[in-house]
Image (cartoon, rainbow, N blue to C red; front, top):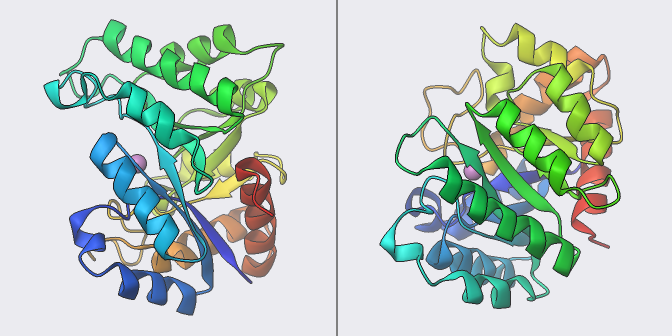
Length: 259
Ligand code: NI
């Protein structure tokens, strides 16, 4: 039962310092594919390097909303655009909006997010969208940016309401669940996960962050731990972990246009 971890920060020092071992432990846990996600130019470049180095590793390139105000990212966009053409790059992101960290103005974030949306349309590669404390803002922005009523992308580590999920689904988006869905207090999120159509659900670790229960105290999180999130999602959807693995891997390959 192969799994596809659709969102892992493999460039992060805690994982990249021994990337080969991380990838091998993932494979031993039947996580045969994973997408390494960039958050600025250097991490995006690193993710492309990892994708070239390891079979089954793919890359996403972009600038995260929490860093788009920094001097470091000013002027890097043209290089992101060039990088996005690489065959190892299967998605545009991590992008989105984040009103939790009060460092960047919403206007600046929106401008950066719109550039990613445009690049997704230009390249035909899906968006990977981060949403924190901005459910209404993001869903309405997605609806107004959709061309012909549709958008191609993933709501990553989704923690929103079923209503927001349904509005995203209507645009053609996929909904991805991370370790948070396994936490004791996440009953509401589990019922959202139960309501996502089988052809639109994805699974991810968001490693090295937020290890799933029962490994919550283990740091860093890594792709091999996806099996715990898979077991939880399978239980709430009343299917076997094998079936959950099969369905989410098929969906991941479809959205990333692999194979
Ligand atoms: Ni992330």
